[in-house]
Image (cartoon, rainbow, N blue to C red; front, side):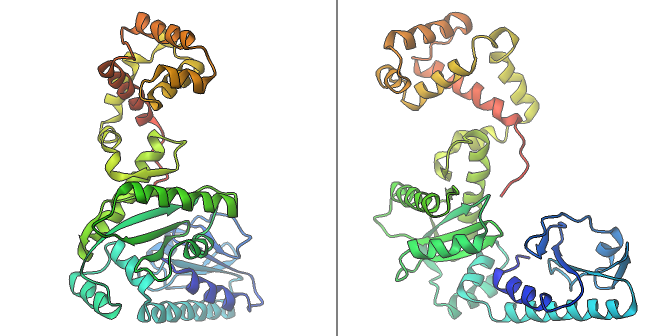
Amino acid sequence: MYLDHRVLAKISQILSQMTMQVILFDSNGQVLWPEDNHKELTLPEALLKNPTEPLVYGGFTLIGPEDEQPLFICLSGDNADVKSCAVLCAELINTLMRMDMGQASVEQSMRSILRGEAEAAELEAIASEHNLPMEQDRCVMYFHFAELDSEAALNILKNVVDENSTDIITEVGRHAVALVKTVDERFEFADMEQLAAAIENTFVSETSHPALISIGDVRSKLTQLSESYEEARAAINVGRMYHPKQQIFVYRKMLIERFLAKVPEDTSQEFHQMMFNRKTARLFNDEMIHTIEKFFENSLNLSETSRQLYIHRNTLVYRLDKVQRIIGLDLRAFDDAVTFKLMMLLGKNNADRKGKV
């Protein structure tokens, strides 16, 4: 279950009034309050098994919330008064969480829809309550911020998006925001890419922190919108693997990358090493790889590539001839270029796949 920042702010305000030391943390052990505490805690197994009962552990009293709530509390001390205080804090948090769930805003409701948490009957009730058409063309734009919390990002996005539109912006994680964009018959993905680029520039200029942005496919029904959301998340996860320097990813443009991501790592390694091995290590140094990547970026255009690399056209031709002589592929020929590109991308399948958004 996702914890809305507004609820967290209310909980933090209550805890700040307490005279004893209190730590609020999530089910992963990440400290949520105090904000200046960046430690990660290891949750005792006994707490996870029975979270609603106070647990004395190393001079501290720990307690969890009701079922499915993502919060835990740690108070300094282990006497009866501290245990009673822990129980009271847990009940206050449970009450605030229940109140928040009962007063769901359109943003909170949309978050439930995107995450696939709303059943069919509940989804229809949400649509009726917030005047959301069940059938309307929409797509999801997903924003991930490694160094910016979602509340700050949300405030910037609200200034960028037209407040009179039917678009909806909602937090979907501590460092992630989703924009549900309504589109019409004139819609083109190029327009969404331009919007994404403009928003990314805004984030960089206002926060000095870049954003990763992805775009899912268009869906015509509200019941299908979670599919666009999952596509947008998948586009970022796959995009970061194969194009780590890129900021914007469009799901429908990433067919090859999505296919390669499904290739088993041992198979990827086997084919990658057919091209990149000890015998070719000297050939494929950083300069040569940069030259080839730039050549591919410029659609195999010799003149434009040499201009961007600040080298003579003949120097570029010499490097490509050298590649052809050693591995037998002429990168100026489309089929050979595709073969080389695939082998190069397969090497990135062995990168760390953890840390998905």
